[in-house]
Each structure stands twice: as C-alpha cells, then as structure tokens.
Image 1 (tube, helix red, strand yellow):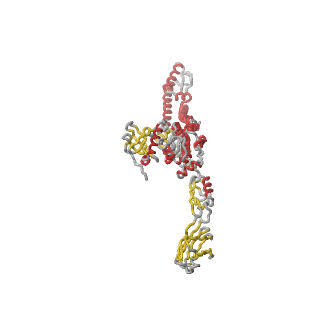
Image 2: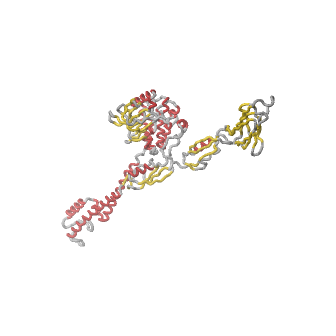
Image 3: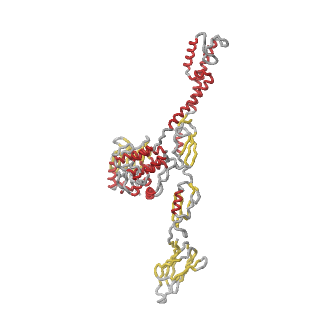
Length: 626
C-alpha cells in the first residue's frame, strides 16, 4: 500500500515551514505552514510522491496553478507561489482559519437561510473563475471553507482543474468526487461552467437535507444514479424558491441548468426571504415592554401611599419637590398657606375653622417631605433589586443544531433547554423547532422547549416474497427503503423470484433501512456425488432437488471383451427409493464423458451399476439441475 511521508517539521526551499497536516486528498497533502520571508501563516499543498514521478502530471499542475493564480476574488483561496522542492512540487496559498463545510455538515443540515447564503457566496466565487474560463470540476463541501469571520471561500482550485470546454481525459481519476459529480463528468464528456453549477446544486441539497441526493454504492453506481435517477425530494420545510433553485441546478442536461455560477448566484439572491427582517421589530419591542412594567408598578405604589399630588412628588427628584413647595408658599403670602401634601386643601386660610395652627401645619408639611423622599428612594431601590434579581437574556437560535450543540449554546446564553422529540425528514438528533423563538427576551435560566428530530417516521416493510426481483425492488423503493440482493440456488422456484426477505413482511423499520432479499438464480448443474469401479457393480443413493438430473460417465474395457462383435459391459439403473419404482436405465458405452439425462423430478434415488460380463473400468458423476 502506498504511503505518503509526513513532511511536518521541514522547510521547502528553505522558506516555507511545514507545521501540521490540515487536509489530504487523492492528489496531495495540505500543511499549515509559515512563510519565513514574508513572516505570515500560509497553507502549503505538496503533491504525493507517486504523482510527482510523472512529468505530465507535474506540468499540468504547474500550468493550472499559474492560470488560477490570476483568479482574484475574495471568495477564492488565493495562490501565492508554486515551486518544486526536493520533497516534490508544491503550491502556497492563503491560510483560512475556520472549518470546512464538510466539517460543519457533520453536525447536521444548515438553517435554510444560512444554506442559501453559503451557496450564494460559493456561486459568486465560482463566477469569478468561470469569467476566466476556468472550471473547478470538484466542488464539494470539503473544498468550501467557512472562515471565523463569516466569510465563504472556495479552495483546492489548483491541482486537477481543467479549462472550460475540455474533457476529463486522464484527470478523471482525481477530477471529480462521485457523490458530487455531474452527469457529463460521469460520462467522461467535456466540462463547462454548468458542470460546477450541478456540483454546487448537490452541495446546496446536502446543506438543506443533511446528505447528498445519492450516497450509497460504488463510484460507478453513483455515476449511473447521477445520470439516470431523480434526486429524492427535499424536506417539506424547505422554501419553494430554494427547491426551484436546486431542481434547476440538478438538471441532467447542462443546457437546462444555470449557465454558470453568476446566474445561479442571482437566482439564490432572489430566493432570499422577503420578510427576513420582520422578526426584528418584535424582538426590539419586547425588552421595552418588559422594562416599563416595573416602572408603572412603582408609580402606582407611590400614588397609593401619597395621594394624587404625592404621585407627582414620587416621580420627581427630591430637590424639585422642595423648590415647588417653597414657590407655592411664597405665592400664597403670609395669610394663606398652600397644602401640597396629605390632609390639606389648597387656598384655605391658616386660621380657618377646623385647621391646625400655623406652626403645627408648617411642622407637618416639613415632616411629609422626607417621608415622600423615603418612599421614592424605596421604590427606586425595589426596582433596582427586582431588576438585579431577574436579569434577562435573548433566546438563541437553536434550530439546526444537534443536542450537544443546543446544550452548549443554551448554557452560554443562560437558558435551560427542555427537550421533546418527533419524527421529521431532518436527520435524527437535530433540533427542528423551539419555543420561545430565537430573538425573544426572557429571564435567565428560563426553560426553552426544543424539539429534536427522531428521523423520518417508521415504515412498514411490504410483502415481497414470491414477487419478481424487479417488482420487489420497486415496492421497497416506493416505501422509502433500500435493498440488498443475494442470488441463491432455489430448486423448484422461478428464476429471479424473491425467496426470502429480512426484515420479514409487516415489520416496522426506520425509513431508509435496508431489506435483504434472497433471489432465485438461474438454474445450473450442481455435482452431487462421484463414484467408480472396475468390473464389479456398485450402488449409490442420493437426493434430487431439481426437476431433472444427469449422469456423466466414462468407461473403457480392460483388454478386449469376450466376444469380438458384441461386448457385455456395465449398465446402470435408477430407482425411486420412496415408492420403489424404476426411474430408468442405460448401458455404459465405451468412450469419454458420455451423458444420460433423467427427467424424474425431485426425490430420493439410488443408482445401481452392474459390472457386466466383460471386465471394464468406469467412473461416473451425478449432477442435479437447479
């Protein structure tokens, strides 16, 4: 088995340090590196040794690297340098910190809007290459990089990529990945910009459904499925505009797809939800209402304690209340005192009947001022304590995450997930709904109901035993099940008929499960027993399963027989041991590999060979046909 040496710790041409492997493909290995001259981190891809030994590969690699270095676009990983060190040909590109789309998809499908946005950025990057006459030919999640800053970049452009309009040729072994390969690539036909559109459509399908449309089978089988089969339907939750984009991108004929990445990017932009910002006003209003409620409660408390005029004093600053009272006293004059607070009537003379004396009234008024201040301060303190006791948080977006991701994100934002489950077309274990919705404001540590997918609903296995193989496969496919066929010998059964199935009929299994089918193969001869003799006779019992059986034999006399004209050699007779009847007989003629066929049907038989009068050497084989 060929092994690629680990070059970590070396420096190519004394300039590019190789630190650690960050990726590997069929053609080369990618290292995190460092450019000593420019003092910056880089990515370095080194061709594997066995490819480097072929000059044709090296020449094409260098030509394509130079061509693609001219594709300048923020969505394309830029090539900085190419070289040929002792370790082999290499090229140097920008290092993207983040993860590949393939790594992200291991955690489940993306939310619809995020999938649409990533696909649009991918297509815009491809559009720049298509404008330069360059076709990527291997668009797949592993080559789409998601930066920590939210950027989307297309990588691995410079190894086995061909200019538009050329055929795959010898590059077919590396240019294209079966799960994402276009029909024309599977046929070995010329590639165009529409080739990348098809692969981008497969990537978008996987972002929405959680897996590519065709995932099982050998490379040849996957290629045939891309050529002939319609992709399975996307989940019902996928918006219609996105479905239309995927359907057109996955058209079998290149002419029926978007002509290039630019056209598909425009379609994806148009598929963006028109009300994508409609949730924001509701989110912004919720915290305002929540914060106003305690303030109204505090004002009501102050009003109940101080009366109608006391409410004004409670909501104003203490200094303002004192100034208002002093001004009212000055305006009323010495003979008339205004009573701004509890128990007094405005404009009543100091000496009026039923009123307290001036000195006592003034003392009571001044005693009421600190009481109002204390009430105001107490209300403010209560509001502060209530706010401190119940801090609020924003409900995060949890849909599209696996359970572990939900728990981690909920913990960071101080909410408590409560899980439930139901069947859906989304992969099992992925969050498909939440309540409250993302963006809502709630108290910290409040529960958030999260519904995890249990996968598609189970289906009942149909009865297929006795059906033809083609009919059984059609029934299983209609039920959303896969199948695995094993050809078996089945005496007495029609060829290509299903003789056994597992799981059995009417069993309930998960959609997408595999049903094993045993299918009767075409009949052929099976050897049962071989025996021989010289002169003497012999008897051999055996069991027949098929409808017919035969005896193949050879016989020769030792010397000459006793009569020159007629020889009395061995003979054979077959008998049904179940009912004692004769199944036929024949004489063993001299010669090599003679055959006698019996049409007796299945049963238990015995073949008896008599030696005859003339000494002969014979051997025979009994064969059953099923």
